[in-house]
Amino acid sequence: MDDLSIARALHVVGVVLWIGGVGMVTTVLLPVVKRDVASQRHALFEAIEGRFARQARATTLLVGATGFYMTWEQGLWDRLLDSAFWWMHAMVGVWLVFTLMLFLIEPLWLHRWFAHAAALRPERTFRTIVILHWLLLGTSLITVAGAVVGSHGGF
Ligand code: HEM
Image (cartoon, rainbow, N blue to C red; front, top):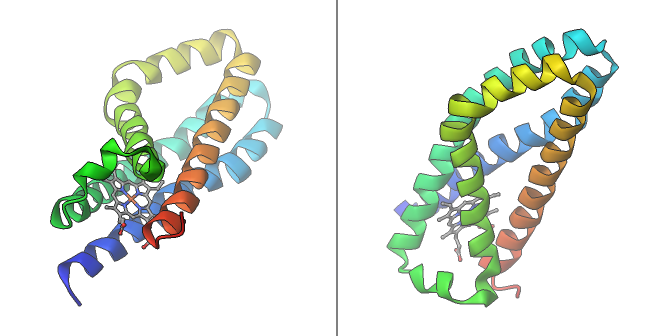
C-alpha cells in the first residue's frame, strides 16, 4: 500500500468520524435536548457538544493534513482555479469553516456569547443552534457526495 492510499483511507476515516458526529448531534442529540426544560437545555447541550468538540478538533486536523498531503503529492493545486472542481472548493470551504469555528470563534467568543444568549433568550438561542447545525450538516453531506463522485471522475 502506498502513501497516497494510506492518506486517502485516513482522510475518509476522519470524515466519517467528524461528519458522522455532526449528523448525530443534529438528528439525535438536539431533538432530545429540545424535549428538556429550557433552563436545563444549555447545560446538557454544552456537556455533550463540549466533548464532541475535542474529538472534532482532532478529526479536522487529520482530514486537513491528509487532504493537503494528497493535493501536494499529486500536484492538484490547479484544480482550485477550475470551477469544474467545485467539490475541491467545497472540501476546503467546509474544512475552513469548521477549523475557524473550533479553534478560534468558539473558544474566543462563541462560548461566552452562547452562555449569555441562552440565559437571556433560551428558545431563540436553541432555534439558532438547530438551524446552524442543519446548515453545516447539509453542506457537509453535499460535499461528501460531490467529493466521492468527483474524485472517481464522475463529473
Ligand atoms: C483542507 C481540506 C481538504 C483538502 C485539501 C482535501 C483534499 C482531497 C483530495 C486531494 C482528495 C482526492 C481527490 C482525488 O483523488 O481526485 C480528497 C478526497 C475526498 N475528500 Fe477531501 N479534502 C479536504 C477536506 C475534506 C472534507 C472537509 C471532506 C468532507 C466534508 C472531504 C471529503 C472527501 C471525500 C469523501 C473524498 C473522496 C474519497 C474517495 O472516494 O476516494 N474532504 N480530498
